[in-house]
Image 1: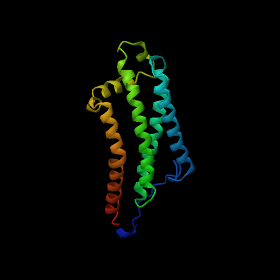
Image 2: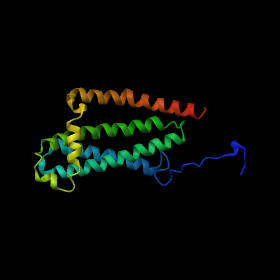
Image 3: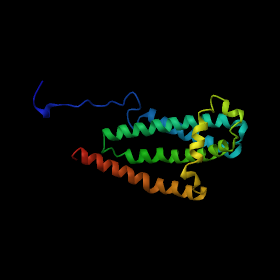
Length: 180
């Protein structure tokens, strides 16, 4: 083993088993799939959100949430590997736009869930049972006390200003840490 610290090579990540890059067909298909699920869920919720089909809606919400979380995680990992990637900000912006739409769906879903009586037999359904705690947490959250109109305005502001600004800060911070 060499005593020269400059010869030390840290292990490098490989993300090929996930999506590879922001332009990888697998990644783009997942972004499109998340957008399709969220758009479909939004339409369905506007047309018919009631106790009868709440479990099916929650399952669709969960599927979209998992995909979006996976895409965000990949974005963080890939962006930390290549802080100068020109597609980074645009990619995060498109993911965040879908995430905001999903949050709008969540508002409708959790309003319906919160309206369920705690003794309702739906809470015994294994697909819905884990959501009881989350529903209580959301009900008691300060965010839920913001009127819907103001909440929508804040979400739009986050998409236009906060998320892009956060991305720029992360890129500058990473470049600084890497001595660029």
